[in-house]
Image (cartoon, rainbow, N blue to C red; front, side):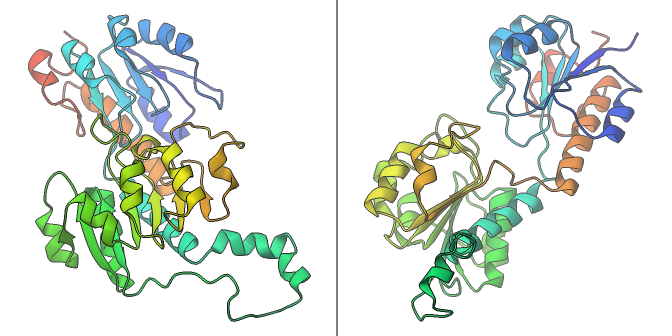
Amino acid sequence: MKPRLFVTRESFSDVLDRLSGYYELEVWDRYKEPPYEVLLAKARESDALFTLLTDRIDCNLISSSPRLRIVAQMAVGYDNIDVKCATERGVYVTNTPGVLTEATAEHTWALILAISRRVVEADYFVRWGEWRRLGTAWHPTMLLGVELQGKTLGVVGAGRIGSRVAEIAKAFGMRVLYYDITRNKALEERVGAEYVDLDRLLEESDIVTLHTPLTPETKHMINEDRLRKMKKTALLVNTARGAVVDTEALVKALREGWIAGAALDVFEEEPLNPNHPITAFKNVILTPHIASATYDARHKMAELTAENLIAFYEGRTPPTLVNQEVVKIRPPGFTT
């Protein structure tokens, strides 16, 4: 009898077909994620879960699911999963790092270019008729933006994605500062990046881009005090996690002109309320958590999730196991 796998959202058919050779699948077929009560009920009767970052895998769910052996997450981040509780219960947790690095770095640069050159604002300027109403085809001060060459990019979090963003900055002739809890000497050698503390990075950067995981230490890392340290001409870009930024403080900073603008792909509240104060600013670009949204990246994410599940089924340690210490508590597989 095959172990039961609950897949919390529709995925790529070829990946699901492959998994069906190992697991008895049940796929949640609605666009919106399953409510917590449904997820809890499904987890209780499942041996494995294929999850997304919008699924709350807390200790109550893990403790209430005696059959559960692995939570395979189709995401790099896993702040929605109580990893400590999972480890204590012998439940394996996996994620999908690496395969979405290029997509997320490219989207970060799409946001940097769009906010620095006021692309979205200019698009509205044309579409809503303001350009036509002014009756002037070209003016020396129309929609002036920021030239990147010679400017300073501050990268907060120098992991795979942050490092790739820093590498691309070299092509624009930018100076790169970076901050992380550990020094990345390889990045320094590749692009000439300079390792600095967070306060100095914020004080000297023309563009600050965030690439840290959400942890208790990074929650509201960018708060009112730190926003005040930034240049008035600086731009903030976030493709990491929404709660890394204190949204109320950011709204205040934008309203009072502490910084020049922001481009955000992630939010403390998702989906974002269209009436949220952050949506009122012309100097803010908002995208709906789509930094990894290319076919290539999302398909690779699904494939890696399947690889983790198949490895576990076969009694092998999953290739991107988050909680490595769980192996000492219970070996991989469904035989124990």
